[in-house]
Image 1 (cartoon, rainbow, N blue to C red):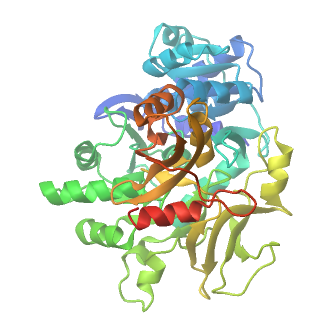
Image 2: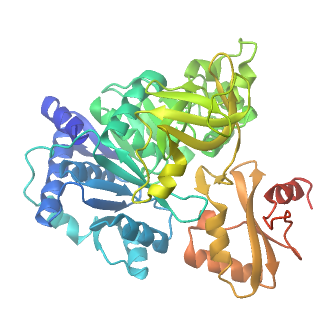
Image 3: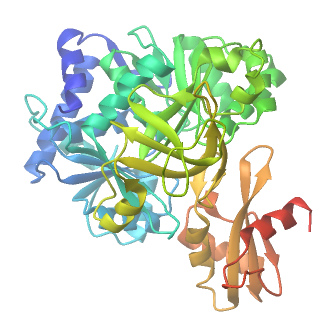
Length: 502
């Protein structure tokens, strides 16, 4: 089952239905969307791309993103979405590891790839190459693919600091799309989806269910998240859905309260990707009303572990409503969720353990990394590395992360990745990176360092090698890092020092 068929069928049935918008500007109906995707596929085939080949997308949010994505699927190839926030060198690593034959990139991002000296072909979306792509002979229909064939190869960093490719199949994306309709929200042709968060991540994962139902796809002209722009677009299109990180929800609430915006036209805001504080979501619901739904997932089980329904987010009558609001909801339809002990055995309700998940949304493994796969997927269960408990009603509360990941502004930062960059400085002996709670961004990145390197030099090193959102916001110099008897750095002590203001 090739997911491209969802666009193909929608174009067959309703070719004149509005599909793609850049801001309020009408870009294409479903017939035009299909035709351009089919031409992308035809062009890819003319370049020698065959089913199973990897084709990357290093693009900011724009209508061409969806056209290219479906064109890749029409050709039977595997889409490799790359976060537009990444440094060119980081993107180059993903291109090399995935074995991508070529990459579609928006103009500024294409320049960063040139600087990084990537070896695969770079096609500039919106550039001279576009005419060649869209003038190609279109394919008649999407190439047949098995449901278990790869559709996306999504790169997520790990505790080693090197990104790992999560293998995401057509079956997984079909399951999470249909679960959206059951566990999150309904979708109709009268709806619109606004892409304010990166389409390479959570926001983009919900495009398929909106294509299936013939909804309108709206990319802000800014290419990102600006509260005033979102309010204007939602009011214009109506019945709007969007995905947002908790920090985006907080910024929207603050902006609306400051300007008198009511959120007219916003029907559903799905939030996830980081901790949402009770005070923030209560304030958001009080201002906007019952428009919020929470989801919990990982790259290895995209958007598909649990959901906290619109009713549960809004309800203030249940005796444990605050506890539920602080959690991540109940298992989504296509998966089974349980809490396990150190050996993966299920534990009683209310007992702390590791959150585990199995089902059709769980990855088959990491790309060409059987060792990491064996440690993460055990007997069909994904070991999330997230710790928490499940109550007797099936509601899951996530208490902490066994992996030391930092979530800042909805984006993941893995300390080891930052540490490895900093440790390339000759005047730095040791470093440990941790997260500090931040009222706006969720967490901020802080680096404890041992050595004589200046913060300015370390900042420049990070700017030259990694994405800006991963750069430490503060460098704290110590004579030595706290360690246990085995020489392991005690990050718990470093976090406590931050909490104590030392």
